Amino acid sequence: MRGRRSWVEVSRGRIQANFRAARALAGGAEVCAVVKADAYGHGAVEVSRTVAAEGGRWLAVSGAEEGAALREAGIEGVRILVMADSVVASGRTMAEFGLTPVIHELGEIAVWAAMGSSLERRLEYHLKVDSGMGRLGTRAASPEVARAVAGGSPWARMEGLMTHFASAADYMGSQTEAQAAAFEAVRAVLRAEPEFVHLEATSAFAYGRSARAGVGQTMVRLGHSIYGYVSPVRVRPNEPAPENLLQVRPALTWKASLLAVKELEAGAPVGYGAMFRTDRPMRIGIVATGYADGIPHRLGNRGRVIAGGEWAPILGAVSMDVTTIDLTRAPELGPGDAVTILGKEGGCFQDAQQLARVAGTISYRILCGIGPRVSRVWVD
Ligand SMILES: *Cc1c(COP(=O)(O)O)cnc(C)c1O
Image (cartoon, rainbow, N blue to C red; front, side, top):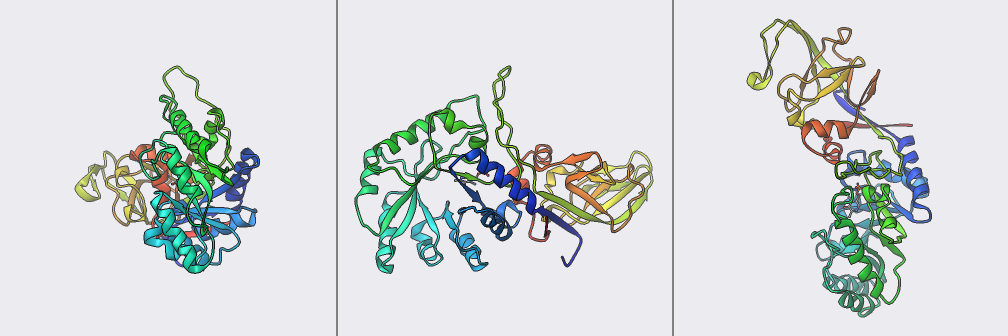
């Protein structure tokens, strides 16, 4: 690590433990670790290495470029599924780097087959069904899907059939059950059962939604839980929440150094727009991380960090490069000392879900919003 303005420590042991917990819950089904968006800010190469060392056989990314970067970093011997790209735009890269595309439109099967034919190599793909999310995936009627998959060129083979739930953490509506049924209707008409059938991401998996809907699967695609998070469910008032079956813990701790500590008199303005004004003499700290590093601007006058094992409220506006905090309860801290944005210090603990709630966003956004300027340090 060259600088010590702001850094994250990612625990290899936690990633391993979370992956193992997922595997145990998955029974015999394959756990595909989703490492898109630089592994939700954790560092895709190192997470991929860790998962591969644990015996993981599948990784998933969003784009062909992400997959190619992993191959170039030496990630071999594991399959890489490309979930949100197109064989029309990126097929050549996918073939060159041994990536497996998710195909979203039946017409693209022929494009992929033509690629296979030109390379004289049979190429695998996974077909995504839009079972009701209204985003990526084919909406073709099931007989048409069956025909497109069975017929056509021998150069492209459907290895997997998948879908994605829109409201997996929501127990107030029936969208998930409707999606599972729509998916099953397509699956039922296929001439042969694909090797990999996968529906669930973290929320659906942790709450056992496919199993409850009577849908079997041979793979799950997990991102959030590999990094230690499962979102809470939404249930109707007075209804019991279903149990989270997947016990995981956050793998990432986010810290930053104090650049300066100073005493302000009562009535002094703090930061842009004088959004905060001291109501008493106050000891403040200027922390070396700001919205360019991923601290949500919305945390101005609202969020808090942990300093000296005590809660330290954010004062005034979050700036691009620095954030000002109240150090009244941590008088022993001085320039160069570290504070914690995500993690545990003393009796205080803050994770991405808590921070997200205060900032009016989601934990996913907090994690993948941690900027490239923040160093990644791997610990055991
Ligand atoms: C991102 C993504 C996942 C992983 O979702 P998590 O909630 O992070 O587990 C799974 N499937 C698809 C299609 C995705 O885009």
